[in-house]
Amino acid sequence: VKLRPEDATPVSSLNLSLLLHTSEETKLYDVLEVFQAGYSHMAAIYDKSVQFQGAVQLEPPGNAVALGILTMEDVIEELIKSQIADECEVISESGESSGSEAVSSDALPADVPAGSATLASSTLRLPRKKQKRGLVQVLRTVSELSPLAHGAVGAP
Image (tube, rainbow, N blue to C red; front, top):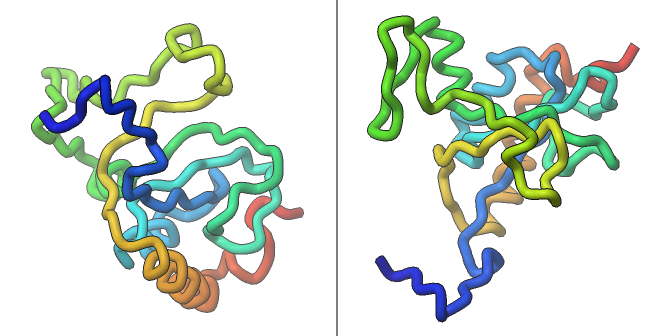
């Protein structure tokens, strides 16, 4: 293990992945298109009352609090209607996955907003400049193809 407490390595020194933002009403296939482009494999999900300017966006919407995190694995599991077991999960006989249990807000640190969900680790790390430039192009393409892109998701 190369990480040592005495080094006090800040999170800012890591190659951080982009976090996309979308409404709970966004169609799974729209999110999957963006995930498949390879720029991010996770998105923060917001209540349907939060205004969006397309199917998926790069910036969080104002002061809204995310309901949770959606990963590429979550989308694929829903589309194939089957759990994907990896090296960190144990599937019980009832089909429940040990890795998909929600964390009680009582168990979260005081500075984490209530309603936040646990993060999954299925992300793709690319250089930031390439990520942002490429992702904007991908989002523009998805926006042109997506019926959700002609107005804000969740808008009346």
